[in-house]
Length: 197
Image (cartoon, rainbow, N blue to C red; front, side):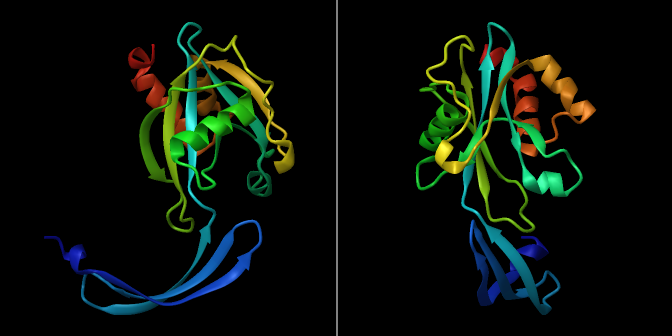
């Protein structure tokens, strides 16, 4: 038993600050720390729902399919805003595997039926409740069911790109790929290339 197993949390107040696109909350809570002292703390918590992302890999060409789209938070932080990413989206009430199949079709036009669950992770647990489910799927990049490009009703404007896996890894070092979930999946692919093929 570690000293942290005695730590505890008691929620005192959970206020909604904004419920526009997602839900921003101000949570006041008592935290009893590992030393037994209780402190009252406040934290803003952003609740956008849980999500899923996927590595689309073509073993014959040793390439991955990524998407590029504008991300305003990245733009506001000094980036061009155009991020290269693995396809991803919110679950919207679906099971993770079904949600990622839907997102792949909307964003890339590829029909995936067999998705391999890998792991799930909190991406920014200091402020965001979201957990992301990670998947991989083998595809043939020459066979697409639709054009992709995103869902028109969500005002998505998505470019679909095929990139050799080794080149994608190099792009992490140059900063051309700087999205966390994408880096995680590309590194997983490098460690599991034989299994994917």
